[in-house]
Length: 249
Length: 209
Image 1 (spheres, helix red, strand yellow):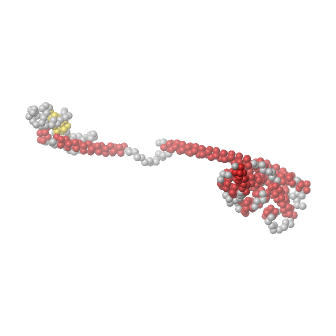
Image 2 (spheres, chains in turn red, green):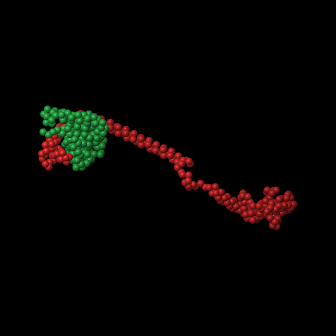
Image 3 (tube, rainbow over the protein chains, first blue to last red):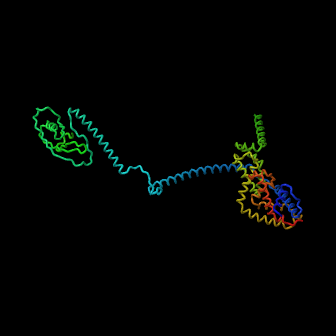
């Protein structure tokens, strides 16, 4: 029997649809009768079911237990999520530390990395600039102080124009000049300040200022004459006496 | 005081009677609001329907009762998911069908053993002539053999036979339970009947009279 024919008989028997042809084949007829018996048996099968003994109390208890279980599961899930988060954070921070190490391997050795640290050349340049600035400030202060001292003393004073920083200077011409102070009788000359400010060069004014010192002791003063390499001005340095002589000019 | 008590008793009695008269949709709405009594009424109303289906699927009373219990537990937990588009009973049977599928997968091995038993029973059925009056009188034995043959079917075929030919549900409801079209439901039922018929081939293979 063809499958389509069998399907037709099945539909006719179970769903009550019409069959195109009345089955004349005895096998088809027998098939149809067997299917009708099967249908009746299936209906009977649905009626022979034992009674359900499930009680309301049992279902209520089951629902209660399921809700308790669900709450517990939810709590465990939340705890597991929190633990997983902590673990992920720990792993992440560990990996970050490992990657951040110098030899951690995350940074390719051939890769160029921008750095903000100054190089040695930068340090040298910066120190030079700072020294220049300090030098300028000191110079300004000295000049200002010199003007104040001059005003205080009432006459022009000689002082060093510039404080030369530490770097080695080029060779300067030096000459030695010995100035002997003249002897002055006490009480005869007008009182001059004890500090003698002298520009030690060979100008007649400076010589006269130096000779006008009022110190009664006729001690010789040894002065080193030299040339300032930066300004070209003549400067003097007292060697044997560190006071009573102001260097500069 | 006595009058108040009697009024409250009467009110509660009327209320209790009222809740039992409520439709499924109203009871579902009350159960969603936390009124457990409404859900109990739903359970009492549809317990047998679900049990019949579960019994046909499982074949044993204790298994069927376990399925029914699980169906109502899941229904209570998922009441917020139920939509009024389908009938509440359809929704319950759908849950039962899904549970039956799960159980069928779990007890696949046991089903194989039962299938062998069913084959033996069918062999017994085909010993004599189909119209033999002695064997036709043994309806109980015949039904038992049919029941075994049905349980030996694959779960998706068995579900279709139960829904259509045992429970006599219409194709529209079957389509809702199986989440398919009506045409798809008809096709599935036809395939299931064909499979049952092939399994009962010895029963149909006798010579026509």
